[in-house]
Length: 90
Image (cartoon, rainbow, N blue to C red; front, side):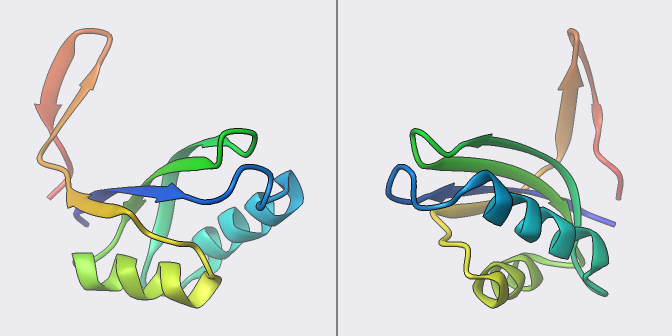
């Protein structure tokens, strides 16, 4: 399934660690979108999330459903880890 990078900005402190865990759990139980990996800074009001989904619209719909503001969603084509670049999963 394609992977997408989503970026989320909110007022610092608005999302508690408990609320972020709740959203992450929803990303594991959703029938269409699956959370893959995420990075959070509640103090600075920023979340970056990698999700698997059939398309960009599904990511946007999921974020709206769980109340997560969206700055951007980008379909990923390449993935790098410790200097090795490879194609993402189709």
